Length: 280
Length: 280
Image 1 (cartoon, chains in turn yellow, cyan):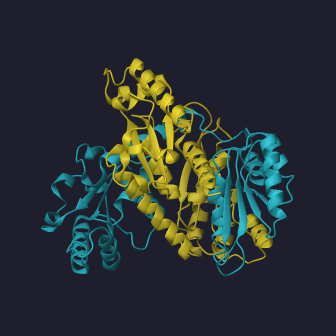
Image 2 (image 1 turned 90 degrees about the vertical axis):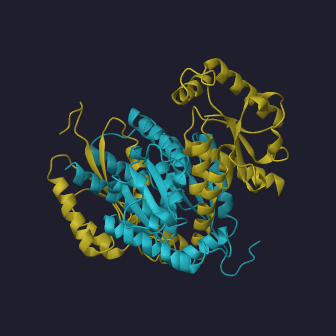
């Protein structure tokens, strides 16, 4: 029963012969363009046989008869499964269909058209790197261990609660980047130098800042009423951190205005460029 | 200089007015169908003005003239930026173009066609939940804290090194699921019961297993030559864990044959179904 105002939500189905991550990512990139509508999302992954596809078709057709016209996105690659899904009366956006033929034509190579899975040494190597990076990130989260900091590709430096940790995890998990993070504490603000354990590693550092009101709000949730969470303390730490970053030529990102995905993208781009400068 | 055998890599460009995550995800879902080819991937995110798009076109055209025909994927939404990108001579797969018009027709609503950003209370709420879930995951990683286990949506239970941690992080970061994980240790294997701190929480538990050879290999990397890493010990722990999971009716996933993304998808599907059973 729909109790909120506005039109009823549109049922959206993401269909895949694998996890459905591509269908969801791409489908949501389109749906985000309709902020005034509400969607009721259903993921149907691992559709690998025609029989399963037929059951999905029945489910889509039932949704079709339930009132609000639904919408389905599919990235299924296997031809007979794909064709079965196309039997539905529900509007179906097939991300694979059209694009695959074009990519085949451009590459002048037939695609395998099999259910997407990790395969090939490159994929497995990359996968193992991502998993190792997650472990490294956890060991080096919030300055827990300053061992092997020189193994870090990237070191995120920031006052406490500026958003280092989720960004660290995202870079590790999605991109296999070895990220350590270093929380700036009061004594680090005494000079404009980098803290001792980061000396000589400046070229791998990225500074994260926030705005004082936002930072104070986040800290209040953790330690309500503390000096640590006061607007004055937050402003001071952010000003001092900014001074250090500027003095040391460390690039800065503001987490108050950027999502974890956006910060990660900026870091990766910057990281690539700095690497190129070091090894031109 | 290409020093490995085989044809030179195909330059692939992922173009976006935002992070490029959709373009990469969807583009790679197509490229994975060509395992015999090699690709040299370039991400060009945050293309938000016509002037920037013109610079990208120059870069694509230069790649076009460099020998191997490149391939570009775009998810850019802003009309004038999109049109400028289409000026390139490089083959361009536009995920937005065609699909957007179809989605608009199906939804009978014009899409905003603006650069994708978090907007809307729903998105921001979901974003904050994801960030909180990452924090929770870190606090509850590897049984570090058994406080607030009852706040967990999902508890991953497994012998050490079966892949709990990356799966935990993935579920938290991408899906905002509160996941704790619990490493089974020798004393937990004495009975077929769940360990004390998990009693009464069985309906939130998922067991992760691996195969003995794989587990021994992973443990060897951590503690070479130890009893902990021996094939015998690994086999025993996996057998005992399986017995406990079966006795307690806890669903099991094998991390030796599934990626973190696949495990997460199975857990999310199962989790949804179990919730429905509890609150039908």
